[in-house]
Amino acid sequence: MTTTPAAGPGHDPGTFREDWLEGLADAYARTVRRVPGTYGVVGRHAPRPGKVAVVIGGGSGHYPAFAGLVGPGLADAAAVGDVFASPSAEQVYRTARAADGGAGVLFSYGNYAGDVMHFGLAARRLAAEGVDVRTVLVTDDVASGPPPVEGQPVDPSRDRRGVAGDFFVFKVAGAAAERGDDLAGVARLAARANAMTRTFGAAFAGCTLPGANEPLFTVDAGTTELGMGIHGEPGLRTTRHLTASELADALVDNLLRELPEPPAGGDGRVAVLLNGLGRTKYEEMFVVYRQVNRRLRAAGLHPHRPEVGEFVTSFDMAGVSLSVMLLDDELAELYDAPCDTPAFRSVPGRHDDQRPAESVPAASAAPVRTTPATDLPATAALQAALDLIAANEDELGRLDAVAGDGDHGIGIVRGLRAAVAAARASEPGPAADPRSAGAALLAAGLALADASGGASGALYGTLLAETGAVLAKADTYSTALFADAAEAAQRAVSDLGGAQVGDKTMLDALDPFRTELHARAAEPLPGAWKAAAQSAARAASATAGLTPSRGRAARMGTLGHGHPDAGAVSLSLLVTAVGDYLNG
Image (tube, rainbow, N blue to C red):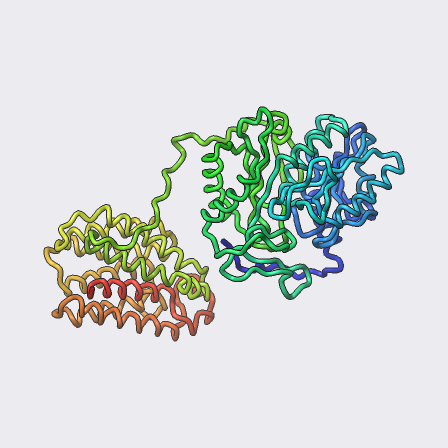
């Protein structure tokens, strides 16, 4: 998952709250307006005479919570505090007054001590003025403490906090108020939504506040903090960095054991929210959700209108949380009801959450296994290359990031995995027949280009396919045959990419490899290949002294000078691994 610190404009911490609220009101004037003299926003639809006003709020730094969720069908207003701090009682009071339509006010917010005190003071003041006020605290974070005890007041120092499950509670409350329920009914349904909601999160890196030079909190590199709160509150445990599937499993496992008894008529339906904490890319979250969906369905649950995106963030914190709300017919109706806010819009219509069977792809193949004894030469050689390049994936990405986009290691490893699988399926044997290896390499080249993508994928795919084309016409193996194959591959790569030797590309390692093989054409293949691979490795290191002349790196000027070319290094690793395989 993404862990690189986010870059953004500088902020004056003294005016940050005012500045961003003004920007929000400018951008979404069609939906919200500022409450005069207050750090709060109210919907353009509010106040509405006879309608319960749903007022939410909390600190800055969590957008879309809270001001981004104001609009018809959701919240009527939001009071906003400084970064990670509660709005004051005065701010809450003024905001609620601006939204009150005479039918009472529902306050709903996360269970944090400052929010409880300031919203509580505002509620007392409103009540003294004759305004009927009810409060529903959100307590969905299963990692933050034991659940509240039924019949006892919620204690912010002991009971669970509110995190991304806020969204479900606000949505149900807002829809109930929109359809005309009275204050007692709105509060009852909001409380039921909270009781049916559970959230568990994980973080990979901390966040930095406006004006600060250092992160507010950190997560050790290469680790995942399971259960960390949105203000950096310690999690349940620290584990190694998890893959997307492992992360999904951890999120689901920690929720399944905490789910309440399903409501009557629920039949397994659950609202699902995979929430990004501020820095995690949407594509990464979709990868996680793929496994979340599988796990929930395997547990007999039926995701209903799932959402993947940012709803309650923590500035630039890297991480995700998973929220689940068990549904009955009434909760589902309210969750489906239309709304229109700056950050979330829902329209009425059919909600079919089951993909047609014919559109569901087969499960991805498992990672390629280590070389089995039964693999034929081309497949075994490619597997050896995959093993060595995968071991150097991070370093290849680092080299590529110097003057490129940093994806070379990931792309080549992904492509080689596909190449190995294609070769294994296409190499008929016998082992001594180069035509068999040629067929395998042709298939491998096409698979690599398809799976890897980008310029590197096309060039590597061409290299393998051209090598395979030469082998497919031969009767016996020899060093001269592979020298001819290397020459054909170099010519095809140069024609396709337009690069020449000296342009700081993979050709700078391929050319000395080809030259050395030709010079040793009369020698046995294992020794000749090893010497040629050594020449390629030396040449790859020497590209540190070159300035890029092709592709994106060329536009970066001298930025890449002093660092070897990632493509040349990966090519040298590939031929080195094959040489090690040949020398057994």
